[in-house]
Image (cartoon, rainbow, N blue to C red):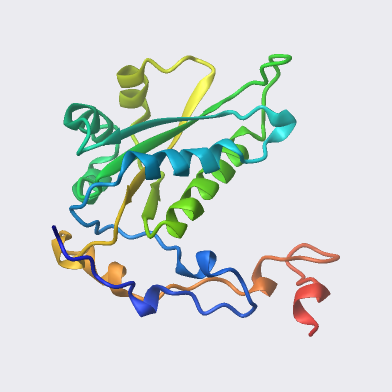
Length: 211
C-alpha cells in the first residue's frame, strides 16, 4: 500500500481568530493517494450532507457517486463528465461525486432560488465530515453539463452543480507539470474587513474592525 504523505504544514490555515481545527486543516488537493476509501466512510460523508439545513427543508441536493475500487466502469462514466483539464488530475482520486440540485420547490413548483446555496452547504458538510476522517475533497466547477445530462438522464428540473474528487492525500510528484506548485504553496484568504460590511457596501463592519 502506498505510504501516505504527512499533512503539509503550509496548507494548515493560520487564522486571525480561533476556529475549529477542521476548518484550518481542510484544503483542496489535486494529488490523491492510490488507496481505497471504505464504503462506510463514503456513507458517513453523504449522511453529513443529508442533515444539512435547506430552505423549506426542501433538501434539493442529489449526488452521483462512483468508487474506482468498487466499480471501475461507473467511475469512468463519472470521470468523463468532468472538464478535460479536471480529468487530467482527478483520475488519481479513488472516489468521484457529482452534485445536482432541484430547481423548483416540491410543495408548490415555484423556482427555488436558494437551491444552489443549499447544495453548496450540503457539499461543505460532506467535505468537513471527510476532513474529520483524514480524507480530502476537491470540488470542481469545471464539468460537462451536456455529458452529465445524457449520462445520468437528468430530469429537466434538476441542474448539475459541481464535481467532487475524494481521497487520501497523495504525492504532488504524481501530478502533471504545472500542477505541482499550487499543491505546495501556502493557503491565503481575504481578511474579514474585506468581505464583511456594516452601514455601507464595502465599508467594513465595526464588529470585525474593533477589538
